[in-house]
Image 1 (cartoon, one colour):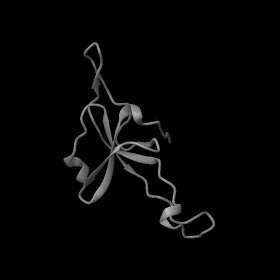
Image 2: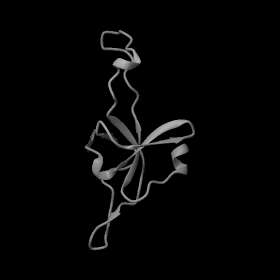
Image 3: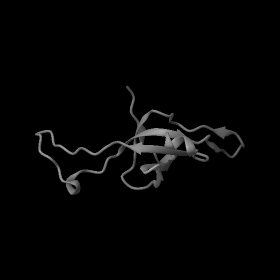
Image 4: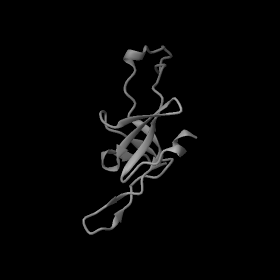
Length: 99
């Protein structure tokens, strides 16, 4: 796996966005311009966390494999083995989905 070659630093989280819907609920093919931006992603790697003012390590709030909700804008695009991933700070992630 490509993301095994990349380890995020500090409180960074590497995510893979879920694929955009290409067919509407009624079965109509959607052109690329009308597809909405996907705000859901799967966490593929996390950093060790950040150090707080007292010098203690504060761990990241998400784990590998969890599905998260991302902000509409932001993140840094990272390409590993011709696949796009995005790097976000732990504090930028809006929430996580529970089963």
